[in-house]
Structures are given as C-alpha cells and as structure tokens.
Amino acid sequence: MKKILWVLLVLVLILGFVIVKQYPRLNIVSGYAAKNMCSCMFEAGRTEQSVIDVDNNFSPINKVKYHIDTTRRIVEASVFGLMKRKAVFYDNVGCQLVQKGETPKRFVDHPVSNNCPLATYYPYGLEDHKDTLFSNINYNKLNKAVRLAFDKPDRDSLMTRALVVLYKDHIIAEKYDEGFDKNTKILGWSMSKSILITLFGILEKQGKLNEDDTNLFPEWANDERKNISIKNLMQMSSGLEWDEDYKHISDVTKMLFLEDDMGRVQLEKPLAYPVGSHWNYSSGTTNLLSLLLRNKFLTHQDYLDFPVKQLYDKLGMKSALMETDPSGTYVFSSYGWATPRDWGKLGLLYLHNGEWNGEQIINKHWVDYVTTPCEHSNGEYGAHLWLNAGGKYPDCPRDMYMMVGHQGQRVYVLPSQDMVIVRMGLNETTEFDYNTMVSSIVGSIEH
Image (cartoon, rainbow, N blue to C red; front, side, top):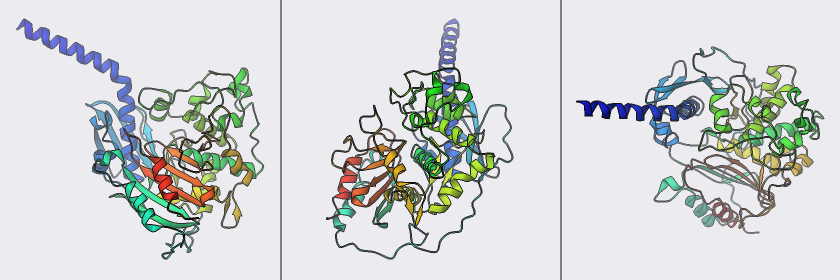
C-alpha cells in the first residue's frame, strides 16, 4: 500500500511539474485553436470537422477539445480541460479572443462598404471570362505544372488548397483542393502585411504620409526611439527588440493570442540595435504601423472604413476582410481573409504599377519604392514585400516579388512576364518547392 501511495505521489508531482511548465503554453495553444476554429467556421464557412481534421490537426493543437455555439458564434477551446479560451465572431471584423473572466461584447464597431458588384469580367468585375486561348501558351506544360502543385502520394508534403495563374489580366489556370472553390475565403497570414503597405501608399498619394517622419509616438519622445522613421518601420529596420518565433512562446505568439491591443506590444519594446542598422522581420512592427495608421484618423469609424472604401471597394475585393483585435485595431500582421481570386487582384494592382481600371490607386513610384531591396536584407525584402532580387528563387525572374504568408500563402508578381500567381496552402512541416512551381508555370509561356 505504501508503495502504491509513493507511486501516486510521484505521478502527481510529475503531472504538477508538467502543468506548471506548460501552463503558459497551453494558454497560447487554446487561444490559437479557438481563434482559428472561429474564423474558419464563421468567416470562411468551413465545417468544424474539416478544421479539426486538417487546419488544427498538428501538435499540440490537435490535443484541443472544442465547444461551439453556432447561434452566438462563440468557440471555446481547452487542452485536457485546462486553460479554456473563447473566440467570438463579429460581422465585418471577424473573430476576437476573449480574455479570461471577460464577457463577450454584444457589438463592436465595423467597417461599412458602399460598393456594388460590377457586372463585368474579372478582374474588374465578378463575371468569368469566356475561354480565352493564348497562342503563345503551351497548355500541356501549364496544366502539368498546376497538377504537380497538387499531386503527390504523400499529400501532407504539398497541401496546396488553391492555385490561380493570371496572365495579361486573364485567368489561364485555376485549380482548388477538395472543399475549396473560387468563393472560399482563405487566411493570408503575413500576406496581410501587403494590404497595410498598400494603404500607406494610398495615404502617400493623398499627400498625408511622409516616410521620413520621426517622433511617431509620445512614448518614444525621451529616448532614441524618437529617431525611428516610418520608413524604418516599413522596411523592418527600426532596431526594436522582437522575437518572431512561432514554435515557442515568443513575442509574436504572445501578441497574437494573449494581447488585446496588439499595436502596443512593439510600441513598448526597447531598442536592440541602433535605428536603421539591422533588419529584423517583425509582425509586431506591422501592427505598430496599424496603430500609427489609426492615429491618422479623427474617428475610429474613419479608420475602419479606410481599407474598405479606398482599396477593397475600388478593386472589387468583395471577399476581403481584415480582422481587428479587441481594441479595434486591424491585425495587418496576420489576419487578412480573401478568396484566391481577390488576393490575385491585389497582385494585379502592383503588376499595373498602382493603376486599376483607369484610376491610379497608388503612385508608380510607391510601387518602385516598396519593391526596392532595403539595406541589410540580402536583397530579399523591400517595404513589407518580399523580393527575388537576391536570387532566392534561382530559376525565376529576378524582378519577381511576392506577398508571403505562414503555411504556404503566396502571391507572386512577375512584371517581366505580365503574370501573377496565387498559391494558397497548409504546409506545416515540409517546404513546398515554390521555385519549381513558379519556374514551370513561367516556362509554359513562349516569348
């Protein structure tokens, strides 16, 4: 009997140690699971089981249990009954995590759209083009390249959900995985950053933005952070401390799944390097820029309406939605949703040097600016856009640049090819061969 008691005591101590050690992580795990389930179900229209089987089916997220109230659109998640987290869906601003002990808000401010769908062909409207065949495209090569992005015995190594190829403003190839189609919204993760930089381009065109402005926040007035410019933030060279690690408890995971006011997380960080001397990718910086954007408007409603009325409506991105944090600030670092076709429209805006259907949305010099390599990035980064200037994709054109998101979200813009390629996926553990995919698609065009 004594032996059994000792064994039980040891087991209890071990369990207690594990719980204490893992407790902070469980908070993030439950938060991620609740937030992702909420958004996938109520924003993208997915089923609970499909999210459990695929999106949230990786360790340790696959240990989570859910309770879902479809009427109130609330998702509760917990690991072994510990650290329950709730996420609530709100119309037009998506899902927000609720802190422990808080009651979900019944209503939050949301953007308003005044745009009506255009009865014309994609990309300037919602109608599908009749089949358009280009004489310089080898369709056998093109279809093979598209098929190879999906086909493989071990599907976990590819996990492509959507692939859309745009050439001369026409969709020349389009394929979706089971359960997805042209109307399915897909989370862009860090591709959302490209929306923010576009909005800053709109402000610049309106004469309301100077990239060299400093003294950006009162909290920085009495230290060296006052010298950080908007340009430094856009190019990820502020020098501010930040840890962008998604596999452990880090600045970015705490920001996304523990904080109510995400813009302030980077705001409160000290300098780790002299301003402008070091490149460091930071989702916190993007949300700090979102806070800076918010501060430029007289009312919260004006801020919420800005991306909708000045970008989504003008491009006809009817599916586009950027989720807000509980403080009402857009999470431009990570939480942008749109259909693959609408993500493609954003790529086309850049391909056309900021012009859309006769209207200059952003200046050409802004497109040139954000696609020019910044210092200390090895030719891989401009201003919130990734570049191939350094040859990371060796078989692809050097003028190619891209919007890049977690789990394999990509929009490739290829000016020399008059092409945009949208690839959406769910790659967790293996690297998809983007170089081969893009170069094979480009190789199907005969010049």
